[in-house]
Length: 371
Image 1 (cartoon, rainbow, N blue to C red):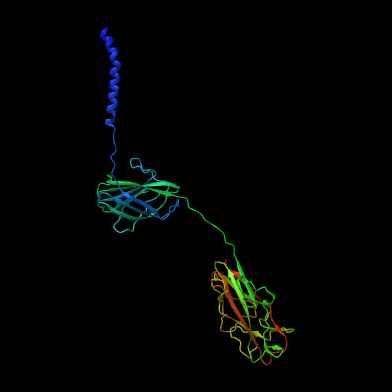
Image 2: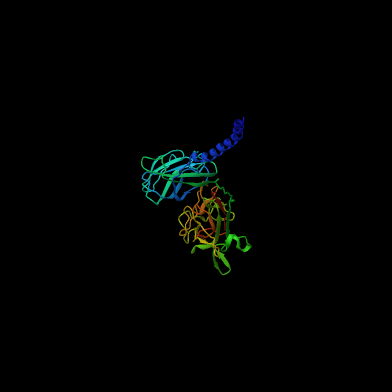
């Protein structure tokens, strides 16, 4: 009885002692992970961090503390921990990767893994551009796990480390610019933005002739001239064109009460004294005085120029100044322009047999932007 009783009293103590012993022994048999040395100064710069961007360049840099005769592997994963499985970021595609960096060769490439051969020495600074990688299609962090290896033993990492890469949604910036076109004609030089073109004394009217005493009339011994000034501004991507349209069906200057033009269009032959002809020639382009933002150009169109009086007319009205849309005389060289000025000189002469009377025509200049 005493023995049994004694055992019963001691049994709990033995059990407790065993439990304590197991508690001490158990940690001694826990499996531990041995990690390779860390690559340092590691980074990967992207030519685009936008989600879904294609053919992106990944510029990888890192320093290795150990020799590695084989090269290195970069795995793109959703976690940086090399003890965890590498799950590929959604949409990332590295299988078409290439490199033009001297001394580096792509040994193999998969959807989310790139193997590069390059003999690595202790404290070697690795710098390589990997091109033609498609970014993940979802914004967020991804991780590049870098590990070096010896020839023939790619599975055994010598040095390793992870790099965090942030994939972002593309920033969209948009806006609209309304079309604009400003064109004016005046009898005086035009100020910025056609500022003075609508002033009464500057309206585009000309009385051509030679003045003798109190009389101004056309002469067969001279080419009588007058200047009108034009200015154009437009943001039309393909520039603007200015057409000249005549309301006189015969194209030249018509005498009051007559049915034909006794002063005919110059066509491309010019105007000389003694010829009953009418035409115009362009001048020298210039930006508006005092406007530092003046840009672009305005220049003669078609056969118009600054050397010969020209006035295109076709009696069928199929083209020229009496056609449905008139005759192109100026353009902005297919580009936008801002406050560009061009003087236009009108010239007319008569012959000794030109009938006496009052001659006139009504002209319109029409500017059209090509947006």
